[in-house]
Amino acid sequence: MRSQWLRWLIVPLVVVPVGWLLFTGLGRDPHLIPSPLIGKPMPAFAGTTLDGDPFSSADLAGRPAIVNFWASYCIPSCVDEHPVLLDLAARHGDELQMVGVLVNDTPDGARGFLARYGQVSWPSMLNPDGRITIDYGVTGPPETFFVDAQGIVVARHVGPLTRAMVAQELAALGLAP
Amino acid sequence: MAALLALGALVVLELVRPAVAPTQAEQARQIADQLRCPDCQALSVAESETAAAAAIRRQIVEQLTAGQTPEQVRAYFVARYGEWILLAPPSPIAWAIPVAALVLGIGVLAWWLRRGRMRDAPITTTPRQVLREQIRDEVERLDA
Image (cartoon, rainbow over all chains, first blue to last red; front, side):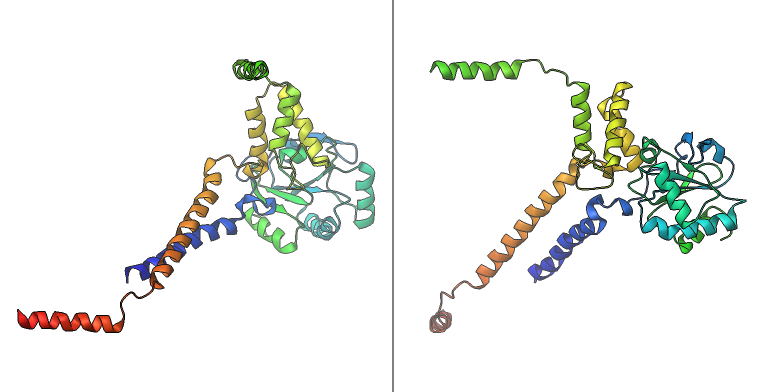
């Protein structure tokens, strides 16, 4: 009798922790790992934009912002999210700041992408040494960070943005979708 | 015999020799070996040829040149990417868990097999022997 309930006890004692370990994935997929920047001030950056103008993270102070890491070779993901970003800028351009950051890309490649898929009204940082990519812990484009008006990172999204995701994050930033 | 003595002397000298501090290049290589390439996952930053890995290698050198210790450099990347960026888990618990699970699994299997073997053990008494013992016990009881 005792061995019967013992047997039923041993199975969950072994299966549950092993199953939990496998389910949590032992921390190997970066897409499922929350960014360590969440809840912290956005990493500062400064440099030159695709248009040749100086720009820095300090220029984003005071309003919610999104920092979108992208590249011309990021196909189809960056192509898929481009209309979403254009729509976001058109609907919330007055209350939301947007800045792009190139990831391992050339200015000519980036310009070609924009000429083909739609010119944008927001600046894109050149990022030639990849320093901004490292500072944000970006694993590959596209990745987008949502920053509140106080400059605190509130969310990070890996992969192409969708309208539903944007609506959700805008709500978190206190903006009406 | 002389060759063995010489070999022994070399081993002793190697053991007592003061450790030589690694060069900055060696430190950079060691750190790069310990960091995961962000856009290839299965390779270290040292092994990967991606632009992201190259950028991280440059950053490692920059940090060491600025006087950061290897621990500070690793912490720099962990602060940005998370613990995931380290190829080896920082906590010894992560190493202990699979070993403990294996030992526990072997223990459960051994218990299960032993239990089955006991259940399948041959019956050493036949029904006739059992009956004889019962009759003998009953006779002894009546004689008592």
